[in-house]
Image (cartoon, helix red, strand yellow):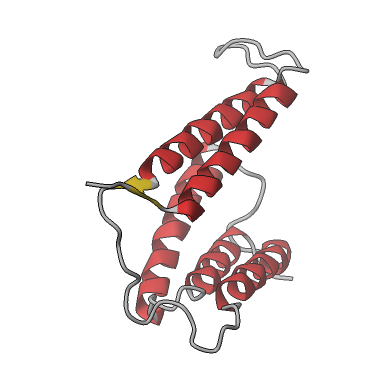
Length: 157
C-alpha cells in the first residue's frame, strides 16, 4: 500500500513550524521567566512552541493511507478565486472596530462573528446567528466579567 502526501498540508505545516521556531528564537531575546513570574519573552516563546507543534501535527497528518478524490462541487469551474471568505472577514473586522468604538462589546462581538461566519458558503444565516449569540455570551463572561475589560457592554454614540 503506497502512502500519498497532501502537499498543501505538508508545506503549510512546515511553514507553521518555521514561523513557530522564529517566534521562539525572537522570544529568547527577552527574559522568559517562569510560569508564576512570566517575562516579556514568555508569551512569544510559548505561542511559537504551540505553533510549531501544530505545524508538526499538520505535516504528519498530510500523509494518509489512501488518496481522497476532491468532493463534487469543490473548486470553481471559472478558475477565479473565491473572495467571499476574505471579504467577509475583513468586513467583520471593520464592523468590530466601528461598533466597538460607538456601540460597545456586545454589538461589536456579534457583528464580527456574524459577518465572518457568512464568509463560509456552507453556513446559513441561522447558524451564523446562533454562533454569534454564543460567542457574545462567551465574550461577556471572559472579557467583561472575568478580565474586567474596560469596554462597556453597550455604548450609545
